[in-house]
Length: 151
Image 1: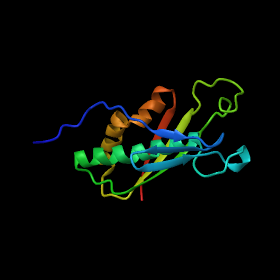
Image 2: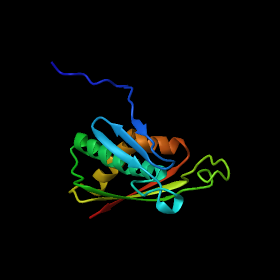
Image 3: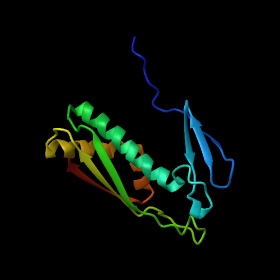
Image 4: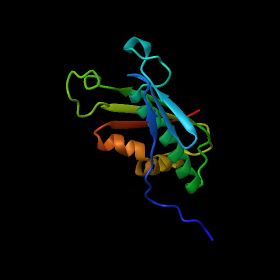
């Protein structure tokens, strides 16, 4: 008998915050430290919160692109994903409220697989339909540009 996965779940990530800048987060059996650089009063033990959200976009792009490629029978190989982004820090600096703190993110996605240009475009189209993190960014007003490249 096949196990049917739930389509909607509730989840909890626990955060212990021993200082103004450090958040030690745990979920399942995994831990992650979010911190600020030393020049902003942190201890530089991890990504900043804003770096972590962009890193989440990279991770989600990788996972969902690979799921789409596998479903379509397309070989995208391993990906190298570099994010170049603009971040309006005025909100984080408490200078003023900012509606779209990340106006633009450019993802340079390099594949070393055997997929043709047409197949890569098919994967890219499917990725945009299903990547939850990119959907959050886009619905918040962020422009995401994806450049698919070959290794």
